[in-house]
Length: 240
Ligand code: URA
Image (cartoon, rainbow, N blue to C red; front, side):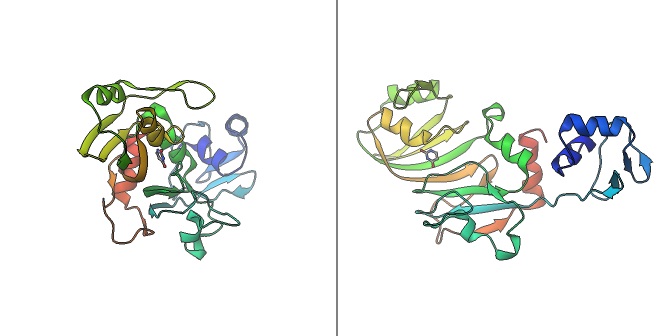
């Protein structure tokens, strides 16, 4: 990681203030005064800033299979939420879900305290593929409608008309389909279906980038740490 980013992440100051601090000779890396704010630092490097050693933040990454009727929040006074599934010893580690699944959407949710990765995975700039299994009520999809989803649809159901990014839709049955989005607008799947007069009755996210979970799990609510390879692959998707 870049030295200036690490210092900013550690709460030492803003990116520009930590750059000034480096320029004024106030930071050492392994006993040597740092000159380049862009220098790469590793976990094993000892970084001292104004006489204080800067700790490397411990980043944690989890894959959670969100059950139905669970709020995508770390705390809630009334409703079951994602935070209830985090082991007690990890409270205080600033973990947060990456993006949001609706209360009634199940499936793949990443939980991490790596703010930069989280930000990039949610940014439309990186076109991260997210695949959903959908059960719906309404008429079957026509070829014309599928083509429109592929081009992007102008949704007019909220304050301002908004055009969705091109998405992939494949019909898997008379009332089931799979849709892959490359962005994450609010309630996007439900709104795309509603645009065509179809009501989503069940929604499950089954993949995000290279990560996949079971289509029909035995028990949702499972949580596990991502492997080193999975973390590496996710980071490379967003050029980290
Ligand atoms: N699209 C939706 O409509 N809901 C979700 O939870 C995720 C994507």
